[in-house]
Image (cartoon, rainbow, N blue to C red; front, side, top):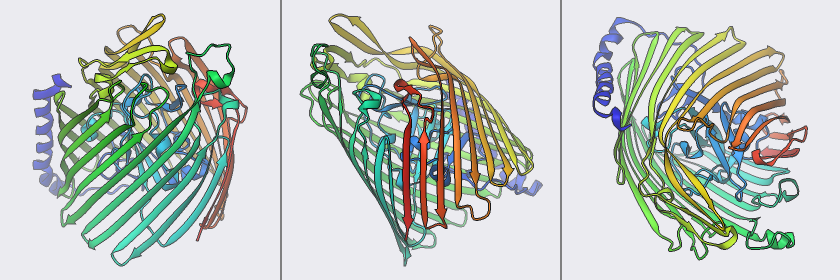
Length: 639
């Protein structure tokens, strides 16, 4: 936030420098205790802390978790994550993604810590509306979720959290083939891993899939059609301390849907009222990363470029040419171990974006941002870990922004700990929000939505406090309270003026989201494990007192898993998710629950089959993406 700038930023910087200068003394005073921490290391925070050490609220969905829930898409894999809502949007497909009640553009979606090109903003569909559907789950190793403001790490856009998709790396020579099909989607995928061959290792993934036409279940407006994705990861080991990685990714969607043409009479046949329209997109990404290390330092230099080309869509302005969205990024980072109990991470980043906007003259706009960041891991003693951080961003349209963050983990024992975290975040308006001119007739009649060049960046600050406890080796629990405030939140308002509609983006003075997260896991023995979470959320417009859309007051999830304890070849996973008082829009509030299960059979590590049913009791609520009972089956073989 701008008001935080000089004194507070200086104070945080002095805190970091003080930690560095005193680290040698602390190392002499005490021997650090090595805790029996969980082995899951989270890299979404640009450092390698385990979940137990990290002061932030982090969650990892492992490859085994993905398989045991029978997920076919990344969206499926996130279904049981804590305090994440993914709600279907009825404007031609896509979804709103919310973490802790934040809006969809406050969730930053990354692939291996990098941004990829995506659309700008139109109405309720933010830049993330189609992001999850363009990711290839068969190439995913695990998913890292960071809840809470994260601009100190990633800059603009990480207002309410980060979803970081980590792809597979080369492990050993292997070829695998898989097939999956179900109510929503069918796919076949192939994975080839050369293992290490001299200094080179390569893995290559291909996925061909098809979104099914389920109009009979969901109405007339869901996207369907074929998709394809290709991914190449090549590692070249220059020597034992230096490595190069090249990543190439290509995805293409040839989808179509039916959309209501309001220029056609409501008494006309459905084929005329709902004409078929195409939705074709093509995304190309290339990234080159150099990693090196010496006796006390790990450093990296990376460059990436991503481009999304999208054909005109029925909701676009008539006459619009192919839309293009380009993103490029250069980042240099160094991690220095100043002592046994102190690690300093510092780096710089340049990011550029160039995008078509919604307009009748196919205008192209570009933005550039530069940043410097400093992050410290300081183990004060064998009880206390501090992680101060600060990031400075310069945006060519909005000037300077400073994002401080301070986290702390206090170990009461190796079985219990307190955590606290405070951070600020911001999001610069997209080019559509600033300059878009969605003005036309077409299927939308006389609708007009225009940008606002006077928009201010969104700014937020938030804090959270957590207590974690393990009870023996069978039970673990975590309780978190969080409180986030947002200033100048960007929204839009459509003013009805028959026969036309006019809308414009504007800033809301203030919104707030506060809530409680409770998570528990218990191992009953004999292969049975219960996982549960409960979230209470209060997200409101502070000016009007009205609740914000696309979030539930209460969310409950219970997941029971059984894994055959001897050979571990059978797994049954069943879960139920309840939403109560879900605010879909200002006029619509829902309460709903769905029961789902998957059965998985493995034969060693070579063969796997699964079958599952979502929404077993056939709940029908298309606004939230529940289109009745859905089934899925699949098989995978490794050679």
